[in-house]
Amino acid sequence: MRILIAEDDEALARYLRQGLEAECYEVGVAAEGEQAAQMGEAAQWDLAILDLNLPKLDGVSVLRRLRAKRPSLPVLILTQRSQVEDRVECLETGADDFLAKPFSFRELSARIRALLRRSHEPSAAVLRIEDLALDRMARRVERAGKAIELTVREFALLEYLMSNAGRGLTRAMILGHVWSLDFDTTTNVVDVYINYLRRKIDDGHAVKLIHTVRGVGYQLNRDPGKEKGEAASAGA
View 1 (cartoon, rainbow, N blue to C red):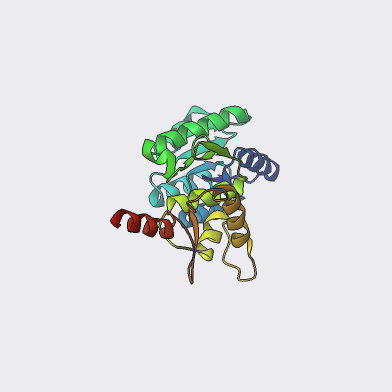
View 2 (tube, one colour; view 1 turned 90 degrees about the horizontal axis):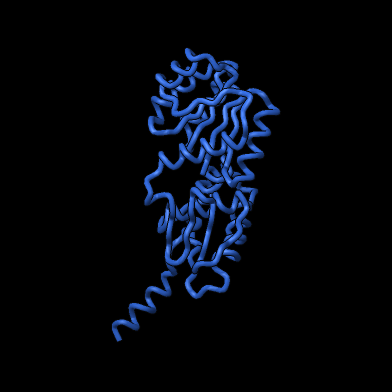
């Protein structure tokens, strides 16, 4: 899952990013308000953490813009402002939660999980393709009942593939969604990580789930050749 952090304190932003990435979230950081609003409007995020005292555009203005473009995006306000009036203004503007600084990272993490649980339908919390299961909340992947250890980036890539199962995804689409980067024809990072996933997800299994789509990129689905073979056997 993807979390956007809007925080102008560089040290705190780095601390938040490292902590959340250690919990297998994909994280983007904006150091000022206009950048935060643009990033929030331009890409799909599962949650935003928003400071109020941002340069160029204050946090409440960012919140209003996000609510106009992303009405269902969970937004958690993380700020030094702790007055009741501040909390009321944020909640009435559309924030989902409010946490004052200084804060406990454990509490922040728990609040994030609670917001994500509320924002996702139960059926979407676990993605399943054949015997492969990805639990978005628990950050767990299993195939045929066996746990698979993935890095943060591998998890984000697999989640994107499974969320678009059966759909051909270009390298540019994958690079933009998983790495938040514009397409660079000189990089092979997508192909490298696809190979990492194949070794962890498909090796040792008769049914291969990750496929190369010639002229497009990659997609995750049941092995087409396996399906044809089973259909022929059924008709014999």
